[in-house]
Image 1 (cartoon, rainbow, N blue to C red):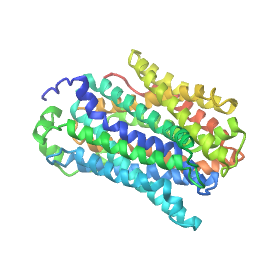
Image 2 (image 1 turned 120 degrees about the vertical axis):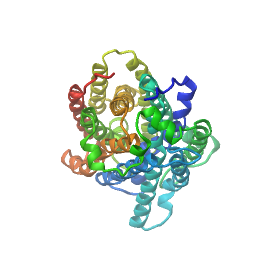
Image 3 (image 1 turned 90 degrees about the vertical axis):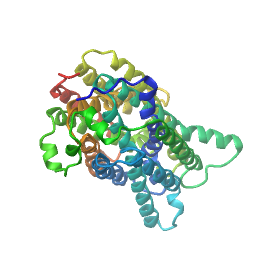
Image 4 (image 1 turned 135 degrees about the vertical axis):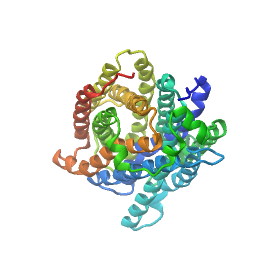
Length: 437
């Protein structure tokens, strides 16, 4: 097998830079789906059903992107064409989503339009997101993968910071120039989606202009596989049966982590409105603008903490301890949220949650791509591995409304549930093997 060359820092940076723009879009979506549909009149117990669509599309799209891109070769590369198509579609639907309520005066029609637009947005974001993970798996050697995924983690968190604070900044800007927020979805949020769409396409264009993928023969040589192996007909069941044990061990941890974060994205707006502004009225200005914008701010702190903690993680020699400690800190963060009633003190629990987020972004893919090294169909494997992110979110979305009803329909109580899920994930980290790390 031909040894993959060491890449300069900036080549590693270029491989993932477009992820910055994709994550701005994803952060806007994650922090504001509940706010958008609440502004359109959705009941809090039904919000979980809207959250099913993003991971459902991810579970369908990302394995297909992996499967088809493994067999693709064009003059633009094998992964990059999917990145370009996904980004272009994402830009279009980002401009539509916050305006979904204006498409019809009939409640159920507006909700249906909104759900369909959300489905297309997440389909396109998943198409744009998955190639970045695959490019690192394709082109970075085992020695540099930790650094490459750390860079990717930094860019993901930086994009989330920008996407999270955009509505807050836009609100201040509109107030300064004397433009009102209007009824329904706040204008500041609508304009934030427009800005996010522009940054997304610019970042993706940067990566596609700087990265040149290896042609099929060179790719096969670097991965120690025959070109025919990579192109032969794939049996998904057979691939999964032959997946390395760490593939499934990490999947078990992922399940509880991502279910917890789905509850955070879904119910943070209601939890902060309740604890810091003492309101549960989803139609009020306080809920939609004050608490809604502050969700973006605490998510930005979460992402900044993730950037800092990712650097700390790189210096901890025992990776199993580092992973478990990070997830445990996130569990403590969720546990603290219901007991804090000052909006600025709320930065503390979300900073702890950011430590868990940093580990979730970097460690699973480092472990799995190292375990898959030398095997054909890397893209398909990583696409299927994404189901360990999507499936728990779907289950959490389906059950969230029922759990919320059992807990008295107080969204703050869902933070206790998220805390418990991360604690279980912390315990399960122990089953992962770290022989190759």
